[in-house]
Amino acid sequence: MADPKQGLWGSSYRLIAAEKWKAKSAVMGSGVTEALVEYARPLPGMQVLDLASGTGEPGITLAQRVTPDGCVTAVDLSAELLELAAKRAIDKNLGNFTIRQADAHQLPFPDHTFDLCTCRFGVMFFSDVERALAELRRVLKPGARACFAVWGSIDQPYWETTMKVVQKYAGGAMLQAGGSDPFRYSEDGSLSLALRAGGFGGVEESSRTVPWVWRGTTEDVFEYATAVSVPFRAMLDRVPADKWPDVRKESFATIDRYRAGDEIRFGCLVILASGRA
Image (cartoon, rainbow, N blue to C red; front, side, top):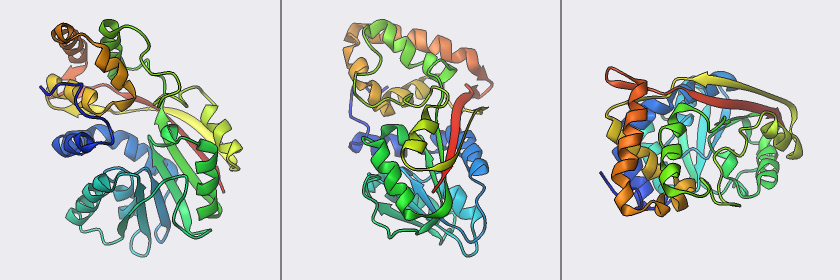
């Protein structure tokens, strides 16, 4: 197993991790993707912006829904991850999926360009959410929807069997004060408040439990979790080297409670929210 201290999310190791586990992570995230796409209600002919798209979802799924005349533009800070997204789209023969490296706080598009925006597990990491949402509202057509999926409570199986186990051995806070927080909008209504502050109207919010399935070994899902979880990096670095075998043993045991044959079926609590420009 790779040392979970190596690399930062956003570095070259992030790209290696994304490539190494692309098939399994795609399966694991498919339940959230499907829920967000269903929630967004894309229509043929729409011009769609997929914000913080990473390796391409839900943008690639949306591109299949808006044919023949619609298209999807995937935006992310990481040009390398977007290249992976582009390759995935090519493999699916999607000619209506394009990539654009850009910052959510300064989008390189004219006013009133898009009919719809989606953002899966991205908005909680924007450094200035109000500014980013105002910028998003600018590039959406009047009345167009922006649809978001964010993590619900940390008290759910995937996190309880990985990061909460690590915390027992690391001590201290799980997340750095003032740092990135995957659970920034886990409290009911908090994302709705942010959307209204960003100028969106017709705001809606709901929570949903969707499949979160890892098809592979217990060791691999733990390695994946520790490799890509940058907000927890300081905590991971605090674990004494001689304690990692105990961390892994306990984590593996708790993960295996969710095993069903060749799959680990965690389930995932997400919050879906939307607003109109």
